[in-house]
Amino acid sequence: MKIPIIMDCDPGHDDAIALILAHASEKLDIRAITTIAGNQTVEKTTLNALKIMTFLGSEIPVAMGCAKPLFRELITASEVHGETGLDGPVLPEPSYEKSDLHAVELMAETVRNSSEKITIVPTGALTNVALFLTSYPQLKENIQQISLMGGACWGGNWTPAAEFNILVDPEAAKIVFESGIPIIMSGLDVTHKALIKDVDRERFRSSGTKAGIMVAELLDFFAKFHDDNFDFGGSPLHDPCAVAWLIEPELFTSKLCHADIETKGKLTLGNTVVDVYEVLKKEKNITLLYDIDREGFVDLLAAHLEKLP
Image 1 (cartoon, helix red, strand yellow):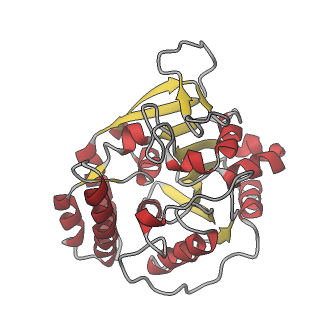
Image 2 (cartoon, rainbow, N blue to C red):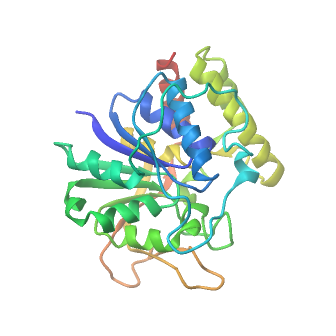
């Protein structure tokens, strides 16, 4: 039986690849796509989601969500993802319109109308998810789990303490982490090990499929940013980890932990405070992913790209 999911995202190169992976998987059923501001403005991320789904020949409902965090000014990552949020490949114009519903309303409708529990897969700031959980508390029991990309145990990528998605809206993250819903956290500890190297990029390109070529072109742009600014030896594919865990969890090494979100710290705002050593003896609220079979991850992505036209 396929896992029914809602993708909540801010495409974004790695969000786009996460959408493509989820769409190609025989184990997942994307019921809805909701968008959030983060990598770019919500207008641009919504347009990008529609373009990606049009490219894939799908008309899964796409609903635009929040244009800013709950209480803060928006931070965007145009220096990482470009002016459009998906600079690099030429994508088709959307073949269909976004939903008339707000993202939070589409989430609620999707969850309410499902006979099975829904898994939410957020790969951006958690504003939409937090508003859904607070606006529709009666639907919480219909959520199976939340497999998210965000956070880090050991240092951030936007500040020394904070990962970008959590930093954009730490108050929303706190609501989600305290919701009682099982959370699988793909943070920087694992995503910085999910590296796509030059040889992998060329493997995708040489697949001969339109999807493989397009993903390689996305990664061409992504690789330039990482090569110019970091010494990772490749491009970390953050967001697809949250999808890959649902498809093939044995690729990952994990640990049950308690995690809190810092919302007030001057130097540590947005930090995911993960009690790795169980110092606090609090109830464990996350499955922390902290290692990955990199080659297996690349194989998984390549195999799914080969399934597409």
